[in-house]
Amino acid sequence: MTLVPYTATDGIPTFKDSFIKDIYDRMESEGLADTVFYDGSCQSADQFLSMMKHGMNRLFVIVLSYDISGVVWLNSFEARSAQFHFCFFNNLRGKKALEVGKDTVCELLYMENGSPLFDVLIGIVPVANVSANRWCRMLDFNVLGVLPSGIYNARSEKSEPAKVYYVERGVYGKK
Image (tube, rainbow, N blue to C red; front, side, top):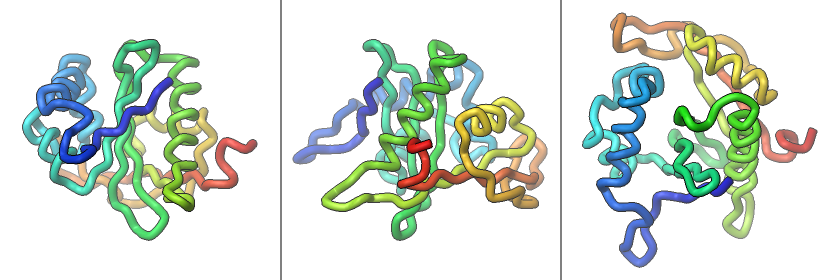
């Protein structure tokens, strides 16, 4: 598994705009976009590109055996913490998704720039998203609790409860 950051080196991006937009299009074609963007914050490839290019998001592309298998991005940065978000494509399921998920979290959690960048990564998952909650449990993420009205559901136009998960550097991946 390789985690490729979407960044610019000397002004040259690692991926073309069309590639980033294709990621969103793939989310849509695989029926994942509405689940990934449960709150309705992103509804098009152009919005996705803008979020990743100009928003406060740090996108990484997950490559497995030369195939794009998913993306993960970080946002809501505070001191040495960030929220993390995943989207695995249909070519990554089952035990392999657990293995890649754990490797990805460890790689993000143990990134350094002279010193560790993160002490903790936080995930907020709608209680209604049974498969994502099962995945988080299978990856041994710690549960902080359920946050009432913790996430907005764009379809129902109402806030819903969300589980708050976290992983700590120095603890996660060392079990």
